[in-house]
Length: 473
Image (cartoon, helix red, strand yellow):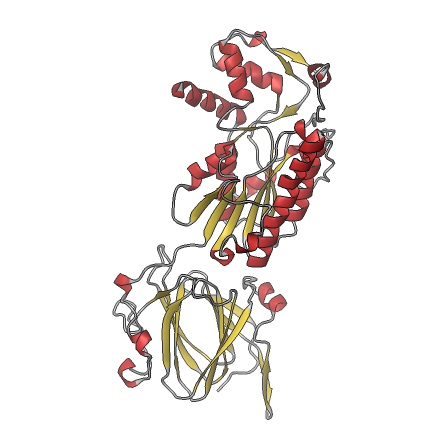
């Protein structure tokens, strides 16, 4: 008999993400009523906002009808409209909890959220049982499924009615034992801009594993119709490491067009895909969204005031990504990674005995791509609260001239060879448009540190980078 008057409560189980929910059912002599799925109340109670798109009903005439064990690549909200079941769930996801089992009875006053990859099965305990479930993807024959035999000895499910006495389909009887099950892997991660300096660092951090894909401009055109480019419901995260970064060229007519296409239009396409498919999107932003006039480090909540086209496109891209329900905007500055960059240029000048004039009135901190990649992996893997995070090196802010002197010193050359000049002096007389630069690019790191990730000291990171670069020569 259905229990009336329960309080909406959510209880964890031994299977990660498998949640039992007690549902308030209101009844009298006429019957009963319940809110089977009420997004606002249930998310507030602790359920994930899993975004169901399809509702199915399985009607069972007889007691003992037994179905499963099926693991599917989507989340499932299971309840019953009439009758009662014994439900059994087995974790068929790759990982430490593979093979974990949980069982319980469900009537109209109880539901269960079954996460993607957890095997689902049930046995009816009353006649005329209507088993209902909502899922957050449309059924597809192309999806990757996994199955487990109902009689598996390792799972050892204590079915109330012996399996020898119940109705089971031939297909369910033929499912494999646990030792032969192909585990369902995690949702895929897609790295966009995989050939760039951050993309290369992300490849190093994430590795060449089956569930991580790397896309370059040649393999994924953000200007095309992305809706059919992938089976997007199989993806959990998109990391956008692609960007137009030629700040001076962006001030030209052609460069302005290219900057907006890459930093806004392409980002909007990814944001739309992420929103429609419940994907977490990670977007890399820039100190150039600020005008650099602040007398303190910039926080994540400071208003943006970009000076040039590049900064404007980055600010616009940030605004688009902020509309995605699951998003991380990682704002950084003065990025150093593989290939040509300021540090390598200064080291080359030092080796050639050149005494450079270097800008001394722009202040910031270096950010090495391996640290930026590590911060991104940390935010996603630790499921940090969504939003904007500043990520740079830690330590005393430096000017570009200070960093140049450090490079000279660390490579065994005379740091006094470096002469400070103002930004205005440095660009005086140069042909072509010059983008305005923020003079203060220092970003406050309080929020990222609070998540448990510790930024590396920028000076120490510079020394390590030069030591590695020297060993590779």
